[in-house]
Image 1 (cartoon, rainbow, N blue to C red):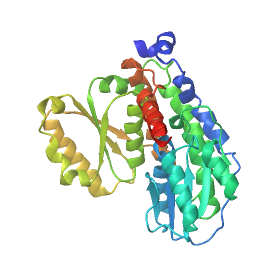
Image 2: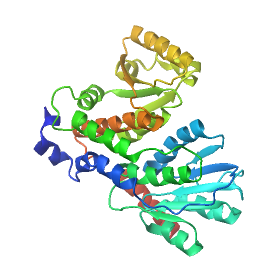
Image 3: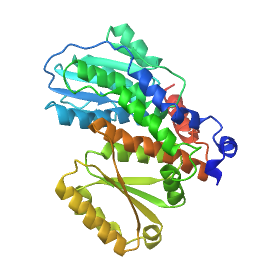
Image 4: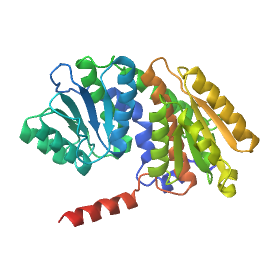
Length: 348
């Protein structure tokens, strides 16, 4: 099988995405030791995480952790500027791997105008320059890889900040690194038999992918969607319970050719609301009657962060293998590069 042969895989994976996925355990261990510049510990009226793409998934995961540990509102902002409620008593976290994400720079500048407490993270770029020029805290992380392959570097410094100011409990970078190392043995290319990531990629190949979860695992579902998009160049859609039962359940009738060629994933978590669990079970029953292919996947781990990351890591491996089956270099992002070039030209 093509997915078991490193030399064949390397011909498609020309920029060595495999190496980056394999090194995620080391990245998490390193990221846990990154020094941060804290902000004032006070009663903020809200926390706003500004980021896009591979940087924004950090905010999605942290939002779930903040909702468990704190009563302070936490928002993930994927846009230019800032909502009107952001002001002097708000904490703005501006995170951009490249440091040149125009939406994040826009939000950061707006936050400074409004007098918000601003904290920044990037591997360099204009965001670092802005932070230095304005004297605001900045954390510089290692550069040179795609943002979507830098989740450890992006996540743990922000997590450490929120822990330092008393918003969330500490997440063990060591535990996530151990999980990633274990997953590398279970999902890695040298694992031939019983490799769940390869099996899922083979199931997904040439199928319409739909992912459903409860609210808690929504970051994992979104990560699968975005990784399938960027790495595999493969479309996928997501929705969440219980909302899905109030509308989308009726969509599983037409178009017939899409319904027949779909595979639906249900992400389960031990802490799912019992009513959500029942809704998932009933929805599975409805879809199975229509002969739709169903896959149920359950998160694992002792802490909330571990349970979210368990599915994030699985999805990263799946997206890599699916890219190979699709014959697509998982690192290449020509359309995104074209958009950025044209946007830059429009500004000049």
